[in-house]
Image (tube, rainbow, N blue to C red):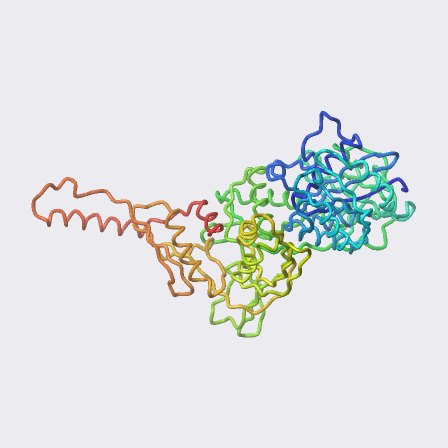
Length: 591
């Protein structure tokens, strides 16, 4: 055990975490030159396209007689649950900071997660080969944040490989070996799982105490299901089977589990004959921030969508879903996501990995409603909102947001937060030209386009991190969109009363461009309760029925026009309006 080192890499998005992992694998000869490619641990097509890590990965390296287990972590604020799981399985962390950008919001929040778990932190300054690097200023920032010495900070360039051998030396010398008892009852922490169509569910774990051998009879503590360990092994670039794994090791187990509900990330594996006293602490069910309905385009695909979501949930522990139905869209699921990026990724993965065509409704957050009879109710979607005369008070979730930006952009950033009903809490200059601004913001205002707008007004220099900060009273209304008098529940939203008129008008204008013209007039209306606040009309497609009249009495033309009018009226009574998928998506991106 003295030769094992378990560590993770934490950093803000785009600070070079995946590239540094590539260099570590290269220097330790874990990956051959033939297998080497950029972002080798990011095995999802989506991750390579977007240049972000979505899933945490684990890989084992050998260096000077030591076994190094790297558990990679995502960097985006939406995937902080993935980061917390990876951190719980480690003894140390590399804190990577971009020498051109300095410390950013996600760096700080991930660092606090690591410190809560008593991890040994090794600060690493990346991208020092770039002309725009500011090594001295960034080193001062790291020293302020960690209270370390200048000599403790390692400088490297993950792109060229400069400084990487020193990082490996620091991992071996500074990170403590795992502590555990090989003779104690088995206690292993599940930090990830993947679905393999041929072998069932593969769980990745880290053994805290005890020893696990092939063929052992094991059980999962929280689900209380027991299995035989058909195959165990370590995670190299591919899985390598082993006869036994001991305390401190990181590995995988295949036990023929077929249903995803039987494996929970954060669960503890132990022996059936000699179980451990208690499960590993610090794991909880993840709390979704944003809720949206996901419906199959073809209603016959409902069961297939359920199976796809279950397989996806296994691979992505922070996705939660439950069945719901809608008048306009039929049967589907109400899904909980960590944020908008997470929602976009899930939608994209359903399309790519499972060939599912889905319609996603307008995202919402969870509201608490106090009814006039004194009861309290949680509302996740607009259709669950009670009638206005039954509501005594509405409470909406607020977040504590931390924004770090250059001082040139402080005006526009504060204006953006104020427009989103934010309350300024604090301003703190980190250096002469970088400032940390703290706001209390309603979560409902942030889920749409806040992050995109923040990036564009700060030219990409602002970073954003948040955590939930309780519920506060608010004035909310249910805004409905009616097509020819029929409400389209997929387009209805819960919104702040002062914003309702503007949003209603913009939605009507947008839908007028997107809904194809029919044989009859289509009235698009935005309504709050029974009050119509905005209206647009999609004009009907008309044939020129008077073309064959050339002259003669006007009554001949009038007769033909009246006949056409009657036909259009009949058509409207039986016709229904199809809303294209592009209309649902466009409403999400209202500008």
